[in-house]
Image 1 (tube, rainbow over the protein chains, first blue to last red):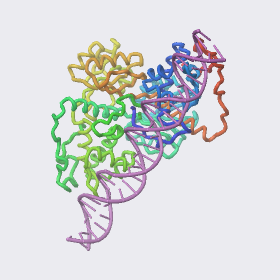
Image 2: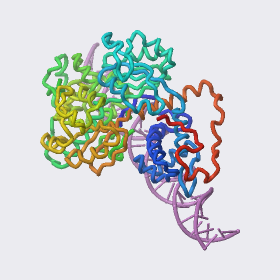
Image 3: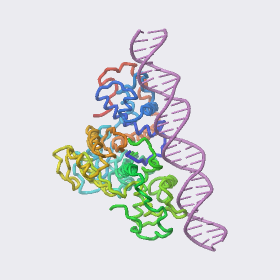
Image 4: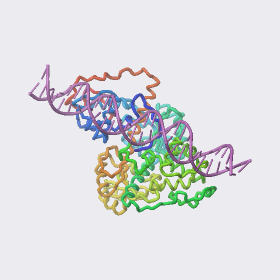
Length: 256
Length: 256
DNA sequence: ATGTCTTTGTGAACGCGTGCACAAAGATGG
DNA sequence: CCATCTTTGTGCACGCGTTCACAAAGACAT
């Protein structure tokens, strides 16, 4: 999924593997659903099915948290909801700021999933002076000039970047300088941050390209030998394409 | 990734590892930037820095595609752009439909990154009759009733689901029945699909929760021994919480 | 209390991905 | 033509994550 990842180099964060951490929210969601239906206990097999994973994997994941199950019975739903929430740090309030209130930023501001898990949108920030004061999701947009003050006043440590790619790195640096140590980046750029700052990336375009790859492969398998050698591997004469404009003899494949 | 991933069980798709496929769009983006600046060739070291990865990893990734570099020189930018585009299947046109034109769906419809890589939004679909005909991103929203017809008429094989969680599975099944074989899912649900259908998931809430985990850990390291045992591991008497409503003696930690 | 049955928790094996380190290949200069 | 220098391509080792398979633990019936 979603997601590619630009974050810590697979440091095991206190014994809990990164892959397990990434699945905990999945379990939590499934458990919350069971809790709403007043299901008291659940087996690893049932919960795994609900979360879309292997039951052995689920049990191993939970084993990193402790022995919270009862053999022969399963897991107590409410208790497990609490334990996972605590482990993820969702028992406390996390104020976040969203920078870049375009279409995507507005969608994020309105997204219920943020507020429903202890995340509170503390401020919406945009560089466009025309946006300042306009209400989005029942909240006035504030100008970028206020960024540092907002972060410090609210004790924000998580920032969401939904700006155009060109502005992302600069916004990122200001966020980090003001005290933000975790960033969720929607801009299609590689952010460089100092050590100690976590960056997670959500890149819609990349996800689609990965799907296209598999889609093409599926289509190619059906009409197997349809494509001959698409281009000779050494089609270009060595040292010929040097110092030539971007519109050389190589097929222009990138639209706009 | 971004993200978690619900897709093929790590099947190596014709020799190219899944992890490599996920990085190809990253390289492509960096290369496109170089191409626009008319840079003729680039070394693995430079390109790796631009893409935010290790240079050895980049070279190994490219080695799966073939020997496209020149030792002592580097890679021809234009040629590599073409090769990666072809490998990802971006040399052809991919019509996509977006189902669920709420805040997020509208943001996606307006998102330039879709159109800029060979992906063409063929239709916007929503279940709300009041939305039908309304223009979003310069395109009239169509009603769900038309879904099957739209898919078949346009030869759509990639669908984007941006509906509420409750509607996602049903929409998914209709998409698949109509011929869609790749799905990008923004709804916070686990989709179950038949074999042969790829699903990639983008879950904003999960990404935030992962960040919160690391954030909490950072905070916990500073004030190391601040937190004592938060709850006795066997706090509940065995077999006591059975058959009790969701509001038992376990702390209610999930807001709303 | 004893036996049976269910389900957890985990040891161990396997496979994938990553990164090191270096040989091979080609460019470049004399 | 030979030497040197740069950069690729890759063999290899290591570590993480996944999965299998089973012993241990507890529930439950008799």
